[in-house]
Image 1 (tube, rainbow over the protein chains, first blue to last red):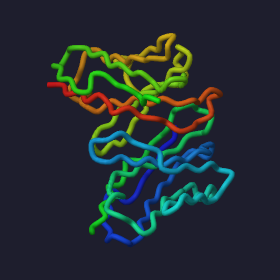
Image 2: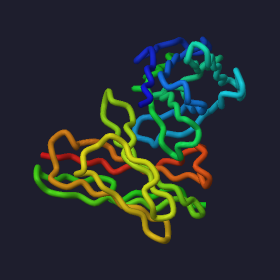
Image 3: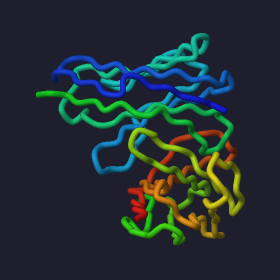
Image 4: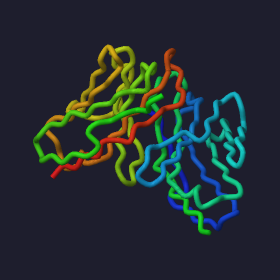
Length: 113
Length: 115
């Protein structure tokens, strides 16, 4: 089955700096890669996703890049703000497996004012 | 539009007991999936139901089961509880009509503590 590894497990940055979280996956059939943000005590929420037919996607300060050959994808947050502090999860699925996502173990991002 | 609603939010059980958790999806969403979240383990997929049928199943023992009703509401049951079943159980709904993976909308979760 699919295996997703996520690094780093914790990341601390200064406000205004950029943050990068990286994930690798094992199943070459995976073609859907979402990122979820979970604030303390809250539910996970989708912040951005990418499908394998594109290499990069941006949404304001957030971008995701995908390298299918190397089987890795990354989340980039620019101009970080304290409200970006949360746990970020990457995930992968084959795209036709319904709601079955394989998640990474999460990255605790702390943005220091 | 109301979000995904899970009940109960918190519960405490003892080893050997069973528990039933409930999930009401967003109106119009026919796919309901369940995930177990524990510290350091991320989110682990339990199962997914679509139109009252189990469409996918994760790698959990048979003590974990679920079902979906005609109104798309779903329940999951854990029998013969073990200490390791202590976790946050998250329900998520999505449109996912054709089986293509799309955005999951999570509930707040049911936090189960097994003593």
